[in-house]
Length: 364
Image (cartoon, rainbow, N blue to C red):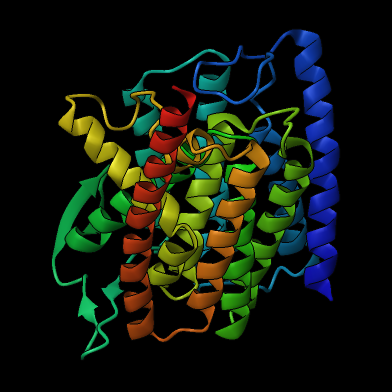
């Protein structure tokens, strides 16, 4: 019952905060004109991510500090609180703060990448990381086989070469994946909410109550924002929201037993789409992360004649379907399902492109 209560609380809080931030932004002129690749036609605020984060932070701190301070994920503590939970708060605060500046004034790509690296470093310092790869055919692959000692201000830290590098790549990649799909009304919020619900159920299944609580509060915060963001959107989450959600959806699988296959299946279509788009940009000699275009999957749906709502709901269904598969599959089956997902996305892109070509021929 406590899960339902805090889900509803975070949802209602996010609804109220998003509305208040929207009014504030409109009064102050903190809006952004639509770009050529956008589906909306008038200037709208894009700092709604602040509401998602604020609702999440208020409810999680209330629960873990006031309601149930004994709830924990690990045995270590920072400031008297589970260090992994504190690291999530600190890393999220850095990401949201820096990306909010980017939403309002614009920042260079290297500056944003530096903020992402610092946030991940805090996460890693708390002990969160990818320690092993599951192997359905034998023993798990240990990623903590090589340690590099680092002396920082007189304190020696042991940098786990493969684990920490892979964790950095995973979390930075997830932040950019969610940012990639934040290109049409309600898509990033809805898919992130579905992913958070899936990770909540996974955490319950494996008996990790604290992780389940974080996931369900995140889901409530996202769905509360979606009330304002579903087509026709009245506010956007901006990089502050998409990067925060990407960080959370990257971290939650790591603290729920390293279930990367589950996260991949839930956000798989976005991850595969992002990799395809990035590879195509590299082949064209463009920056894979910052080059604007209309080659993402949601753009392909729209070009094929789908309405914004039809495109978004179609991708909700894809995310929910693979999330359901992830919850009901063994490690080997998840690997098989992940392979099928890659093939499915590739086939979907081909089909949507063919529909687009036929529509163009009919118009001529």
